[in-house]
Structure formats: C-alpha cells, structure tokens
Length: 564
Image 1 (tube, rainbow, N blue to C red):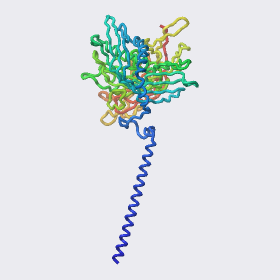
Image 2: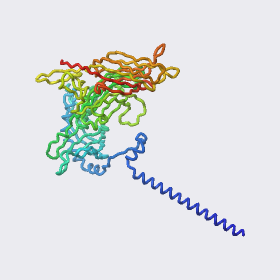
Image 3: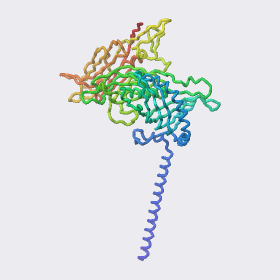
Image 4: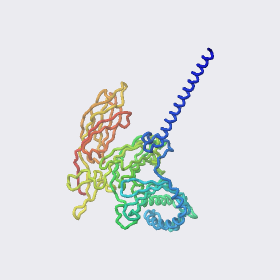
C-alpha cells in the first residue's frame, strides 16, 4: 500500500514539474518573441520617428542626425589627380583673387599682389555630401570639405613709405560646406545649362601671417588689416548668398545672379538682465547687428554707460538676398574704452521665420556662442522689432499729401545715411523730401492680471503711469485698492511729434500712504500701432515676478510732409 501511494505522489510531482517547466519555457519564448518584435520595430524606426519620440533637448551631445553620405571614393581619386588640380587651380585662384584683394586693400598699403601661390601636396578631404530639396527646377548639392594643407602663399606688399614686405600666409586650416547648383535642367547633354558654386557655410578659417625675414609687428595694425582684408574678401566674393556662375550651354542665366529680394528693418529696442562684465560698476553695453559680416554692412548702436538694462530704440536697415537661408545676428558687447570690447552674448534669428509685411516683436535669449546649442547660463535677453518687406510688396501706407507717393513700409523713411530723407523725382527736378510721422496715440489701460503682492496682507493698491519717452509727457490711472487683478478701462491721448522714434513706457506702481512701490513696467515702440492702426494685446511686466497688462492702442495719423 505504501508503494502505491509513493508511486502516485511521485507521478503527480513529476507531472507538476513537467507542467511548470513547459509553462516557464512558454513564458520565456513569449518574452523573446516580444523582445524580437520590439527590436525589429526599432530597426524600422526612421530619424523622423525618433524626433517625434524624443525632443532634441534631451539628446546627448554626441547624437547627430546627418543626411550626408560618405565620399571615400571621391577622396581617393582626388588624391591621385591633386598635383594636376593644384597646378591648374593655383593659376585660376591667382587671376581671380588678386582683383578682389585689391578691392579690399587697406589704406595703409600702396599695392598688394601674389608673388607666389601654390596649393601644396595635401589634397582636401570631402567628408560628406547631401542633396537639398528646394523645390526649384534644378539640382542642389552640398559638399562638406576639410583642408589642413601645406600651401605656399606669399603676398608682395608695398606701403606708402616705400617699404616692401613679403608676407607669407601659412598654417591654413579650413572647414566648410560648398553648395553646387545645377540649373536649369534641359533636354540635351549634360542635361543642365549652368553650374553655380558658393561657400554655403564657413565653419572654420584659420591662418597665420609672417613677414619673411622680419617681424610683421614692426608696422602697427598691419597684421589686423591684412587678416581683416582676407576674411572680407572671402566673405564678399564666394560666401553664400554670393555665387559664381559657370555657363555650360549657351543661354541667359541672369536669373541665377545674386539680387536683392527684400529689406529687413530692425528696431533695436532694449536688453535686460545682461551679464555684468565689469569689476567696478556695471557694463557699458552696445550692439553690433548684421546679416552679412562685412564691415560696411555691420551696424553698431550707441553705447549706454553703466547699465545692465539698456534702452536703445535705434533703427537699422538691411538688404536681404536670400530670405530662405539668411539670418540676422546680434552681438552685445561691453565697451572697455581703449581695450578690446568684451562679448556679453549673442543671438540670431532666421529671416524665414518672419511673416512678410508684418511687424514681429521678439525677445532673443543671449548665448555665449552661436554654434553652442546648449547654453544654460543666463546672459540676458534683447528685444527686437522686425519687419521684412519683400521687393514689390506694399503695406497700404500712403502719404496723404501726395496721393501718388507710397512706401513699402513706414520704416522706409529711415534710410541709413540720410536720416529719413528720400530723393523723389519731380519732372527734371529732384527734391529732398522728409516724412515726419506725427499723430495722436490713444492708449486704453484695460486691466492687469496676477500682479505680485506688494502689501503685508498679500494685496496691492495698483495704478499705472504712462510716459512718452521723448516728450516726457505723463498720465496715470486711478488707484484700485486691494486688488491683484485690477480693471481700469481708462483711455489717455498723447500728441506724438515723431512716432518712428518715440516710445511708450508703462509703469505699474503700488500706492502707499507714505510712498509707492515699483511693480514692473513694459516698453512699447509705436511701429506696430502706426502700421496696423489699432490693436489690442497682453504684455508681461518686466522687473516683476508675475503680472500682465492688457492694453488697447489706436493711432490717428497726422503726418507732416515737406520739401527741404
């Protein structure tokens, strides 16, 4: 009997072990199958899928999504033919670059020519290629190139003092992206009419200057003048949007040439919370603004001394040649007097982000370097008012005194160099005409929301002060007791003599029996209300932890138009 019981228990136990083992294997098999399915899904995932799953700010710094293809085969062939390419290219560069250097020759030099130019024995390396889909009837290709060569370049320089200096350009290091455009496509070989080439992006351009048998520092300022000349020549002769056109088939390719496509008008309003670069006192900030980094196209603001929250309210105008790729760059410096200025921060904005014909008010965060995407240090912000007007676009503003005279934008009267004066042809006589944008500004202070408490009881007694900056005329609202969300609905009128250069400063104060407490402010230029005529918007208060102000602005124009 005991044997039978033991046998039954043993069989049941054995069957149990078999069941557990089978179920365990099935579970492990399912896990392996699920893991394989997941891995297969990741294998099919595209770059766009990964961007949807994870925002770019969470990528490690070493993660790069590149559409460029490797060009090992091209580099191998280029190394073989480089001696012949170097000899032919040296003569071509010498013939084409000498006139450009002469154009940018510093005033301290009498002449500048190449006495020797060879590209050396080290061939450049192409590190990637990509095809750009730009919607045009052509093919656009970008080649990334790196060159740490050993060229032999000697400039024969003569000064007005009769001193001749052979200057060697050495230790050249270059990394950049060249753009090739094959357009238009035709139905005969080689299937395109012309080739355009340009330096699309200059990532690095380093070189050293040395006087053979002497010291270049013996002539003060010569090194900086020659270096600036070379960089300006590269920027203005081949850097995008400048392009060189090589016709392949007979035809008219004037549409491929560089032409202005519009005007960007920039009003530098103010900056706030700038980093202090001075040990004693505060920074003395000024701004440098440009679209193309050429000396004659870079604009500089005035310096505001001892201020970390400067207000400039200055207007600048830039010519745009390619709105799809060009961008506006602004750099804020601390003026150090006779010493070199120190960079506080910089920012940039794509022209393509602007809606044509519409004023855009932006605050840009300043960073240390435009190439560094992750800069968490607070260097301050800068406020810009931007208006991009493509050529041929009108915004409807017309001078009431001359019905046939219209402007593409209000800011058009602020031409750089003539202070708002334009030459207008009247028969055979050309007169200088000046537009003064005069009018009445009506400001309705509607309400404020979520103001920061200013009293011990967690409330405030707010009122608003409105100030026109140029005339210093003031108005103020009534006091709203014990409210952090006051409603005023009060309207004030200001006679404005020069709307394009004036500003409206709106300050919020807390009324106390024995004084007042500052609760924040907002600064508005008048460009938007002049262009739109009327608008209503909500503005955050600067200098306050929380709080917004609801305003309604209306412009009644009374422009003065006179011949001078």
